[in-house]
Amino acid sequence: MEKKMTEDDVNRIFERPDSRIEVNELFDNLKNNLPNLEKLLEECNSHWGYEDPIYRFYHHSFKVYHLQKTTKQIVEALQSLFPKRSLNEWFVTIIDDGTGKKFKIEDNDRWLEVTRPILEAFFHARYFLEMAVKYGHELEYPPTMVPSGWASFLYLYNLR
Image 1 (cartoon, rainbow, N blue to C red):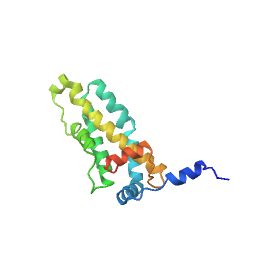
Image 2: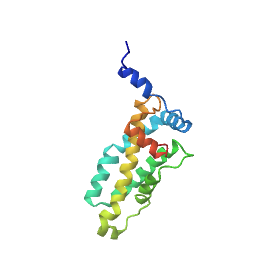
Image 3: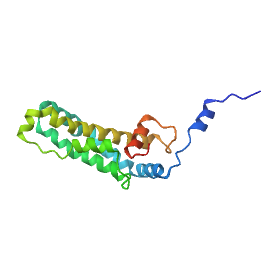
Image 4: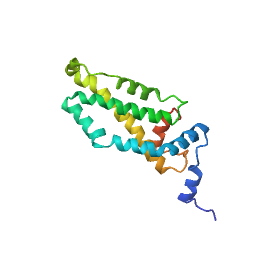
């Protein structure tokens, strides 16, 4: 009689570790830097790191520009996980479009056009930081069958 495959059998077949050297180097660096990434994510989720800056956008306050500093910190932390590898081109474009801005009084007349990229850059950077922390905790090894968040994290480093 032929034995039916169980869910565990399927998982053993498909849930194999990703053997690529670059992915494993990134994963090891992620695990080693997890405490610093957790601290940064905590700051990004705090009142002053998240709630207030988004409010400042809607309040039409120049203080929304301060969010660029946090975005740069996140990008630096993510790049430090794999310094010899370029980050995803689309991500870099979003970050470039949303950082390096200094408030000018005439920005008030084009508020959405000028400040929305600041928020967009922060949201994308924060998302990747969140995925790094989440999967740094959840994964024991980099899998070949990848959850969406881990897959996008790999895209950040052009590994997918």
